[in-house]
Image 1 (tube, rainbow, N blue to C red):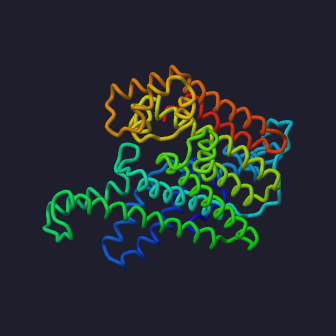
Image 2: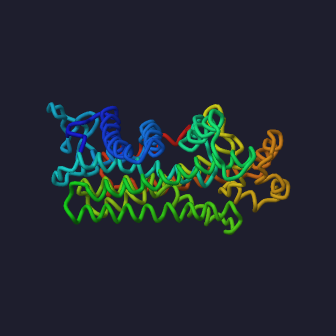
Image 3: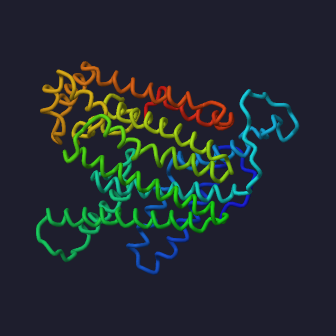
Length: 400
């Protein structure tokens, strides 16, 4: 355990603690990797660089929810309405969470860091499936390995099983993508190790391990649905697309950290279930918003290829609605064509807007947010409501 302080309060302190924990988890494995040679060591070096550069959305959600359930606020507020210095704080009509102190805060930070490893392992596998080499304008692990392999090919005369420039490029890409798969596997194993070795009562550790298994099952099922939809194996019904979004995004980004926080804080199971449901609504809203940004957003703000979803033929709620309209025959010939140029993409985007697809998906987001807000009742303590409302507020005006 690399975190020693139980009095961290601000988000900056939390980020530092999470990064410190991640550095320990990755550093230990990077040191052990040297036994197996420079290429294996390089995998861990690249992974460490990418993991430590993240936004920590999931671990921060876990820790801020945990602290709210334990009655710790970033302003130092206690569960009973006074600050640590005795200053009276505003009371609310909702009861405040005040379960017995379980003393699991340091372990919670360790679990939060492990969830970030899980996130990165999913990203690596996703990058292999999608053939992506870049994330947020920078080479991902696969892109970095590919660039290094190409550089090595140019400076050294390496034996190849197949001749020709195309074969060499194919070998370089195969090497890089293999690195992505293997590192994703190792990070999944590291996540399990962190959960299994957590300094917790046996029953609680098993509960968290069950939660982890549930999360992995749903995320993998969501990925399979996503690929099946994109490849035309699975019919692109709106209901199926929404289920896929819930599995692939909401479960591990929102439900996992919220449930884990509740379990670690000793919250009532009813509170945990309410948090999970609220997280599912928020997660689906965020994924629908991502789809809107990818199709209608400003690429200068979100940093993505503005038409990648159209070129890839990604089955989103936007496309599901368009299929039901008279505009679909004009859109279909262009959808899923990798060679689409800018003017053709703009043509498709205009038709998607004119047929009401953008408005329809905005309506779906509003439905999810209404359901989310209805859950913010006496079941969820006020401090946690504040954490969730802050997160929900980020959805409004979101550009990236």
